[in-house]
Each structure stands twice: as structure tokens, then as C-alpha cells.
Length: 291
Image (cartoon, rainbow, N blue to C red; front, side, top):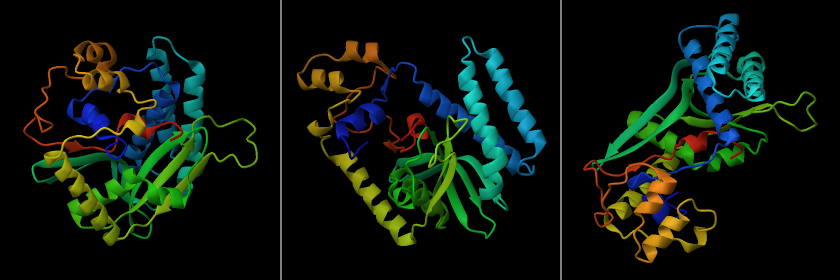
């Protein structure tokens, strides 16, 4: 977000304003798939075997309970999620998860630097059957746009790998595990239900990216936040930004269109918390959909 527009970053991470959005089914489905995958891998971490019927029965019961508690249940939604997750457990997990050890599920990675916190949440950290360290991110959607070259360029994964390297000194491979969020009954040729795509970054790559992060950090401390007017199209903060530019009060816009604290002061674009800026490249919306 910082690279797209520094002002957008400021609204999101310093003022902590989150746009109030209409219900987006793809986001809800992706979040729910993530929750169930975390649930599944917690069983594996506890010593259960891949594909154990106890795990499948437990997840099936969990979905049924969630459906029963839903105020306005969307039966197709739960059917799609159930099919995706159970099919993943039965067919994909035995292929990609054999022999994995030292699992960390939804691991919070945090590194303090110069009074500031760099942090994010990795879906899964583990060692594969050959002892190699891997950091995995789950992605879901109705089309697979991933391959190894794409994964090499995913900044979110580079960020996680860099944090883990700074925390432990160990170089990890990074990967995306893709799940089709609506598996068709009769899939067309080329439709992929699942996929695992891995990138191997070097220590030099992680060191270079860390230097890049610290440069951003220095700019955030000392520079005036800049607007990128080429990024205004479809920006969730457009009306707010336009009011600020014209010198109008934006408080009513904030209260009507955003969730978050409304009493933050603008301290000349410096930190308001005393703890420093937080660079968190992982947000709920990053977990899901076709991105």
C-alpha cells in the first residue's frame, strides 16, 4: 500500500480507518476456508494423521454447527466451503503434507526495529520431509493465477520470509497453497482445484528486502506523506482525501464511511502511539478471493 500511495497508507495504518464495505461473499468464503484450514493443521500439529477420519468428522460437525448458528444461512456457501476443505484434506494434503513437522499455525511474526514493529501472520510454518523450512500462505478463489514466477514476486511472502530470517537467522522457502473455492461438478480442462507453488529466496534477497523496509521506515519517520494522484481510481479513501486537500473538515466523512478510532490527531505525520508505526502487509482482505 505504501508503494501505491503514501496517503492511503497513512489513512489505513496510522489513522486506522477501515472502509465500511457491503457484504462480499468471496471475502467471507475465503476467510472461512482459512479458519477451517487453521483448524485442520492444528490437528496435525497435535499429532493426528493426515486425512484421519476424526479430523474430517470434526470439521464436518464444525461446519454444521456454524450453519445452525447462522442468522440467515446461505446453504450454497457452506456447501461450497465444505466441499473445498474436505476435498483438500482427502486429496491434496496427502500429497503436499507428508512428513511435515514443527508446525506453527497462524504464526505471529514480529520484529522490533528502532522502536517500531514489523509484523504479520503466516498461515503455516513447518519443516518438510527433508527438513527444509517453509512458510506457507493459503489462497482461495475461483481461478488459479499462481505459478512459481508469480510467487517469487509476492511481496507478502517476501515480507514473511524476511521477518522469519531476522527473528531466527534461518532462511525459509515461501509458498502459496491454492484452493478452488467453488469446485465444479464437472470441471473443464485446465481448471485446477488445488496447487502448491514455492519460491526459494536467498539470504541475500532477504537482506536486500530488509534494507528496503528500513528505507521506508526512515521516510515514514522524517518525510512529508505524499499523495500519488495516479492511484485515485477506486481508492476507498478518495472522498476523505479530497476533503482534506480542500481544507474541509473530514470528520463527518470518517464517521459515515469508516470504522476505526476517530480521535487521532495529525502530529505532523509522526507517530501518535509512542510505539512507532506498524508495517503489516497481511490484512484480512489479503487472505481471500482471487487476488
